[in-house]
Length: 184
Image (tube, rainbow, N blue to C red; front, side, top):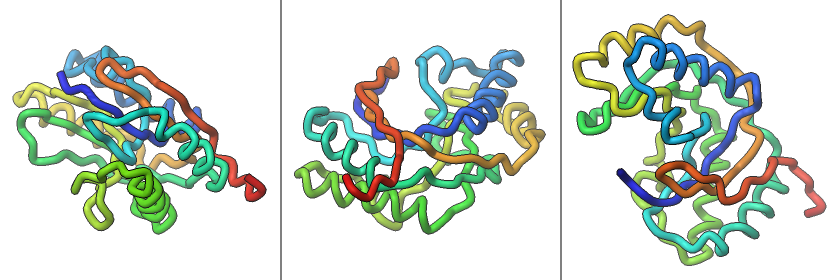
């Protein structure tokens, strides 16, 4: 199982519940419970690395969160990546300049701390998504995809927190509320 660290963008309770609803539909149909079992929380991954020193990021994330307001998100489509080893299904947010700039500015701040940004999270490469299923058996992918297409999309809300997590299983190291406190 993969191990590492990730900076995640957490959702407001109503939007988080919509994503959990998708997780539970797939669990009840016995398609996958992977995200539930690894104790994940619905999120969008902004950055990930196999190794890093969490203490380098705590102050950075606290300051970053204090300077950014919650971000409006609208999950408008269901998708997958062409990686048969993972068989991942996700909800994709409608791309917005604010979300893309938020992630780009975060990576710029991380880079200034001397932490390398992989190509997956580089400007013009990062693809925002919220996982709803990992490790779906290949023969169940069409069924899972069909079930997710029945969700009433779009579902909208806000990203309200930024967190550093260690995985796997997922363990939150710290999180900060997006507050747009310009005095910070």
